[in-house]
Image (cartoon, rainbow, N blue to C red; front, side, top):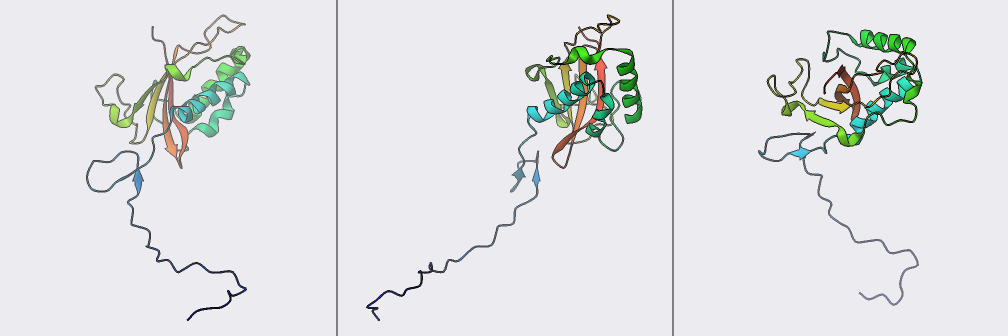
Length: 185
């Protein structure tokens, strides 16, 4: 049948067969090379460094307790002394009262290119650095040299020269699962 005139309504596309979405396994950061796997992109160094920067910004604003939302809500990884999350924040508040952290304002006391990053799988009890006992799969241990000025009032060091943190992803947002400071040459 031939039409002598086109209809006035807009033409509809021909029907298209749509295949159902294929079943895809849940994504993971790491997986063995067996079968079909879906990998997530690893957490970038910028996301890790952002957490560290927020800690130093909190000290510079003379409000280290504002960093409390950066911590995991559960137990934390013990890095230097057996301290709880509350004890760490209490120590930071005490240091804030006794030292002048305003000297940190506008300074880059830590630099991303100097950050050392270690995934859970990269560490063991005998590696250097060793894996902390409470570290979990998915956690990331970072070490950053700290170049902080001296306290203008006391002349003492505001921080030790290496900051160590264990960061844990919770809903794709990094949180502090452990924190410590070291004096290393």
